[in-house]
Image 1: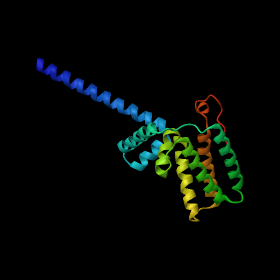
Image 2: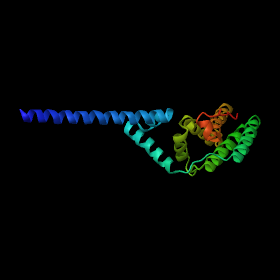
Image 3: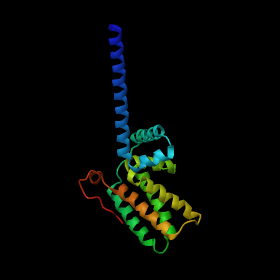
Image 4: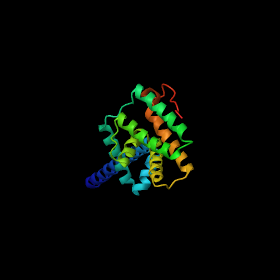
Length: 189
């Protein structure tokens, strides 16, 4: 009889441990899903495997923690705002050049903010940790910018690219206080 009770207790302990592990994994998955939002779904679809997607997102977080990303200085932010305004105004006459300028502007802003900029896919992954809501916009805008150099886009594509770049420019120009809701973030469009 003592052996049966011991076996039952061991089985119960194993079941409780398994349930606790399952709950822990579900909570971590839910946290990543909440943090990355649409980027979680995109990564899941791209990887085709939940474990691979979760591993990818965790690796992004770990890589991002090692970077010295910081807000752009107020002086630089003003220069970038002025440049962005001029770029948007030039869109009417030279939409392709405006998209190329937007791509270069975002690259400079990201570099100044401390993001490594050597590889586009890595840049998009890095920005997805801090700004998952605009990472896909950035990917789409850059894809249009590349296609534009090959003459494979419409004016509507170019307009969409500038709109997508605007979203990234806006978040890169936010101050830490505005990210925390202490001030109203501005849409510099």
